[in-house]
Length: 423
Image 1: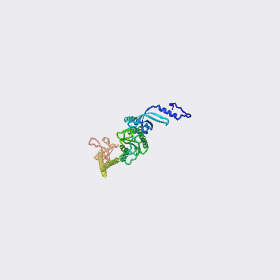
Image 2 (image 1 turned 30 degrees about the vertical axis):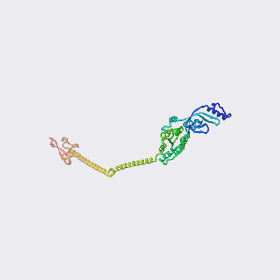
Image 3 (image 1 turned 45 degrees about the vertical axis):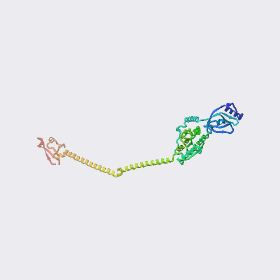
Image 4 (image 1 turned 90 degrees about the vertical axis):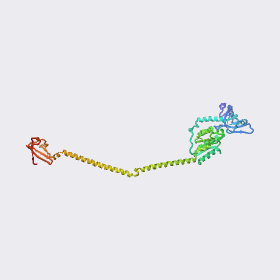
């Protein structure tokens, strides 16, 4: 209030008229401005030259009363209707008596399709830069949701398409319905309220927002920035089924799944029970074939194992091994006997050689061994003196002789003779 030079204290408060007048003076300084909004109410009272409008901000829950000449409103082409987007050139006025703020309009221009599309493209660029349309943030739909939340118009064809097709595909699927306005100034608020309500329900696993086809202005609520941000903030996956294939509101870009039509949305949120039964039957048949093939293979392997000699006739292998042991035992016995025989022959040969080399063998051939008095063998007659007693050994035993003279060896001209001495 310091801008208009007002000062007050608890002891010296300002009267209402002073404050209202100061507000009016401050508002009056704004001059004429261009304002964009959505018409939510049009009042043309009979006999009055002034028409009354309510202009609402499409993003925030803020409204402003607008007054204009009735001739100005009637001259606008196309005619003003509820939900139309317009640009108003007017001057803000503060009425002291009622303490209300109004906008006096001097020009009203409907936003055409080209202007709307340009504004939507601008909004699309802003939201896309924030990452609201990124594929990474989109969540997959559950295979079979416990409950499907459906936001659509009251008794609409979109509702019928979603419900009938969903229950045709999966008859037991529960559907929680929220009927809202799908066009006009109340559409955004009601859709957002229904979205928040279903998002808080723990049993709702997927939310479908469905609407039939329409003009660009009819589908404009589903490109509202507030609604787009609400869908992006929802914890439950959202399916957008707005209009036909060629319709692309911003809700299609932010939703987790875009369905071309409400019927397509029903196909996406629930599986087809017939297809699933056929798939189960196919999987059961495939599993049965795999199991039978496995059993057949194991049976053949077992039969092959059983047909092997070691399992078909276990005793046969033992008999074969026993025969081999007997043959080895006999061979070992023969080898031992042969070795003993060879050793016996070798021993006999060695004994014969020993006997051949033994002095006793020589004595057996008639030779004798003569030992002198000193006990040594007599090899030369010169070693014996006459009268020496000599020991003679022959094969049969020994006897004593005495050496005498006059005996000659056949090999020598002279020698000594011996005479036997009685033993």
